[in-house]
Length: 359
View 1: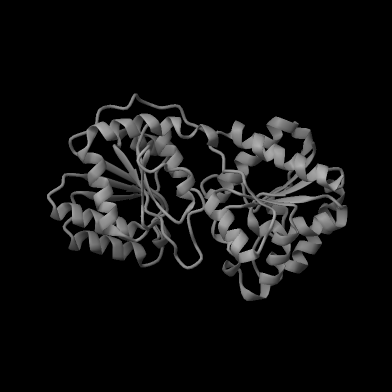
View 2: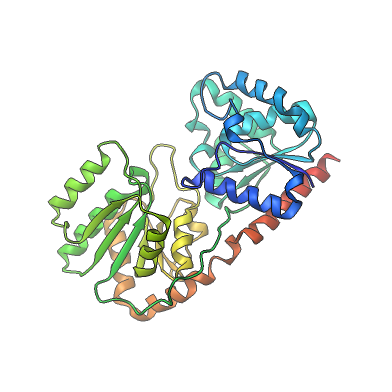
């Protein structure tokens, strides 16, 4: 099987890049490096969503068609390169599949003057490989796409740095993600305020790049208003080594992602990272977290934007050490299906299916 692999980025500090880099590495492992054609994203003039994109995609397709002709299938690993995959498919006669991650799986995310192009690109794909059930539902509903199936985003498991200790008396909570509205940090802060009013002991660490907008300022102001300065800390971006220490030292991981316009959580690698370290997690309904978090088994799922429900879920987990221990034990066992070896098998099966259908 020879694959042409297209992506917007391979930068692993962002979700798109981490998924794409993992998919690419797994494709090379399964098919051999010589059987994967992967143009450097920097070469692609049509990887940005802008008004010139139809013309730039056509130009990129003309340049790349000779490389792609020898391939059996084209994989657009991130949504912005879907038009390029469609045009390459037209020029070479090869089928293409499209990975659908999250926000850009919603047709209304795209500017009106490009919506026709992306609608055509999504509908003409031989398969759309959605990273979660929720993403698949959004793609099907907004693009009216038919050939949608689930191929979860993969995960490279970091060995547990420590055997998980017993539940700590100070109830340590960790949240990891870009400090922006879509990640629900405002709801998390309100939940912490409710817990403080109930005299519940906790210590919260929030880790992730800080949005340059006024959102972070409003969050920090609200922390002061609620008297949480000694309990809630926003650390900003940290090294991978430091992040793993945070995971190892925490008792509970919480990321209450919610919708912000068309933006939503497509899957959430951070939930998997926490569970790999034996940490129970709390996520939200109406998102890809539903594929990761098994309510009552490895964590809890709550209604997005509901601070009272979030506070109650945090308190319930900490108030029952036996349930916490069961969740902590179940957490690392829950992520096996997200290993790249397993995801790669699903991806390979999708490739073979579309190639056979075209034969």
